[in-house]
Length: 423
Ligand SMILES: *Cc1c(COP(=O)(O)O)cnc(C)c1O
Image (cartoon, rainbow, N blue to C red; front, side, top):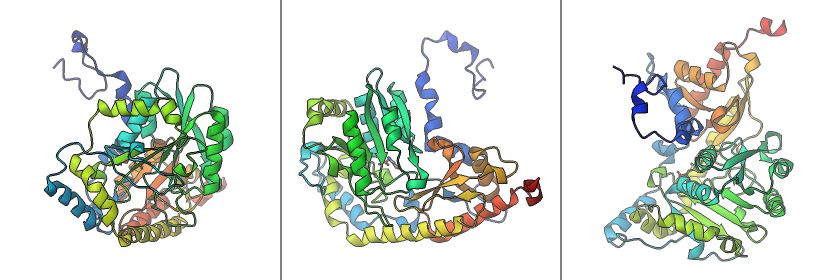
């Protein structure tokens, strides 16, 4: 029974008898993952309630389970053909196309196991003692988890809700010092659903150049835009400042399980060669594993054969669900969205705790909401943004309407009575 202590948070007394222990750094990191936080929220929730109401998932980043977001048969054919051809049973070379004011060569593209591995690689390549990296807040905390794991410091600059979640450029300047190596932007934005203009990206490039750092641009939602601003790749500014572009097929083709992503060096001036960043990316790849060869082999056909209609259909559904989300959230008084989403699949909403009772914070809000209404939403604490919510609208339109109705009745039920507010 001495070893029955598992689960009480303390190691059993006999652990000291062993010569090994787990990495202390790793143990705290799951708190920084969306998966970890959503897991805690779902833990207290039934599969459906007495009335047979289904769970409405609005916390995820993977809509592939919804029929209206299923991938195109062209992509499936590309993988099946690659597999049947028998030609991709060895390690093939990289292939990717792009539209920029200069030519990329195959040497500029490194295939990775999804965009996640691209982030892992970059954080390993950059980590040297004392180095720090600038990340956006609210943000995608996977960067922080990987940076910390590699012993690198993360500093946060703000995205400005009142200016369409643009980068606080003065904040970036104030944070940077001699040990700052790079800044990260996510465009189109997760979690904010924003899409940056050419002009704003030009300013980001200028600031980075001035600070002597490079830009890591996470473009995993590239082309998933449905508002005023069209998607502009940061690589357009590669001759102003070196840019590492990270991407994948996960979101645009809605196939996150296929695990194929890339790192692209947008650097016509060869700065990444000079500073040996390229060499160390190659080195990293030499000591890690590759994406499945038949998925790599499918990429040329997948890029070539995917019809415009598939992309248009996805965009149309996202535009429709973003509209529903925006209009219906307006009717909930303790929640405000500073701007309408124009890209990706998320919107950020501010929680006004002062008009609610019996709710401590965003995590508490999401746990109680999941328990009472079977609606799953990601709390801002998972994005470094306390007391906000990230709502995913990439689900079936009818489920989304249902989910927001339930969110509304939850808020009404937990509202402070008016009389109380006046005293
Ligand atoms: C989903 C996501 C990723 C990870 O993409 P995968 O290709 O599935 O590994 C990276 N960055 C952001 C901002 C994401 O939303």
